[in-house]
Image (cartoon, rainbow, N blue to C red; front, side, top):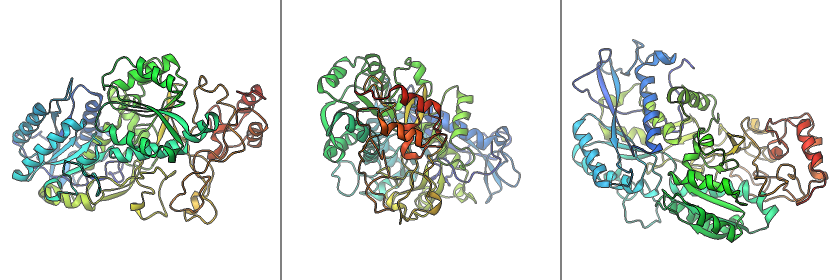
Length: 583
């Protein structure tokens, strides 16, 4: 583990370069005082486990850095949060606050628990978490009522994605106010992760357009028959709305929409509807336990339609074994949560180190709320000097609004004017760091999701892939390289959907795709330069033999069938065995 003070921290370490707390009565012997952080979540759900575990890991790294092979935090180099203004060390203490969303949402109890915690801990200035919008919304209102009187707390949402919790944009007529519409009331609310529902929809929409749609359309025609299914939660509405409203732009034909309960146990009728509709693509959106049931029953029946979407349960490495591998070939969107070093230099832990540390400590891999809460709590200790320890929440808000991190775990982080995070909402940034793209308002180089797929029991990233800029590109010179990203893998179609999916990867067509902001060339950056044409023929053989004993370029990862990013005898043999087979 790296022995450096924290510099560029995971996706959400961005915002919390500064937060303040005063001292309670009782303090551990080696500390002079305490700072308290409230962790809000639905106890009993996987999202709560992630919030709590990520925060606990960060707390211990601050309080006991020696156990992680790290130096301390001040001139005495001991554990704790150091304040140079009073030359004291503060112990980080977590306060658990139940969101009362299990087994069913109970906003009344949730609000009561929140207010009790704020009264019990008068020095607690920061809250982290919040997952269910139908509970988070009334809790947000109660927290802001409290802040209007007491000047605290600041709530950094980590889990809830509904736009209007932070900012629903200038044109949306939502009945609830937000930071944009009533800054003075809502200035204490920020979002750490995930990105808002609209941006989640955009990213899923465009990544689908750049990867899955062209390949499936080449096989099954355009517009591609597509079935949408998402749990009956409000955050899902804008995600599915993106697909329904923009289906023609994506080359999709929406042939059905299903909205099951978040605790549905029988997806038979929905899967019957998928088969009856003739869909070849399924866009699925789940954050709760029904997602596991859906994909398990999809795999058991071997439905002849490819699933891609959001499934929180499926982010866990242990998920594969838990459902007997029935999620094989499922593709999910993950803003974070895969063992993927987008920014290998991130400190004090990069993605792989964080993943391994969580597995060793908690016995399982982290989910997205783990990454968020870890980054937030650990980020409390990153400012130098720690002037926030002796300042008000109004001062902290000003610091949050001005802060940025060019080297966070998944991209350039900065808050928007209205306290959401800048995102590459069209998923157009294929590689980091974003040198040469200084205007973060374009989205290029900022936070955006990636797509992993379950392949042989492991989550393998199939987007981003890497790219080579066109002549005249404004992209930096060092990106003039067609070598794929080290974690990039071929996106695979289930063999029961298309039997020649492995070896029929090259055809005569090109798929036009949106231009990058730094480029004027309208094709060739994303997805596939060539597409399957229904037969394993000379085009397929020409690719593998032309790349014999070479590292394949990012745009022909399809030819790398054993996933080692090197064209060898295994790849050539597979094509040869299927030679002249057709669908």
